[in-house]
Length: 91
Image 1: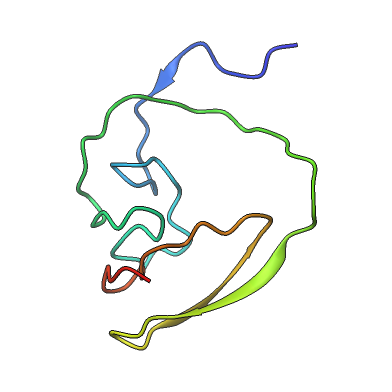
Image 2: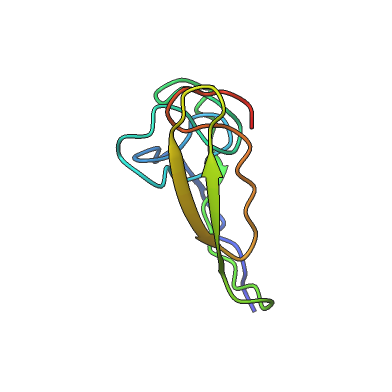
């Protein structure tokens, strides 16, 4: 059973240049996972794969930035949001 692609990807369309996570919204200026500004980062090749994870169903989680007041909701099994996608402030 093959779980990973053998080739590394360099496609950063809609992705963070540092941690490779997808931006949830085209208007996001910062990565909500590592805080890197959109368009910045090392842009190193990365493993592009999709893993199927069994576990609890996705849950809606509300977030609000204390600095700029921007609010958003995520719908994920595991929410690793750590930065505001609008101003980059650490949550």
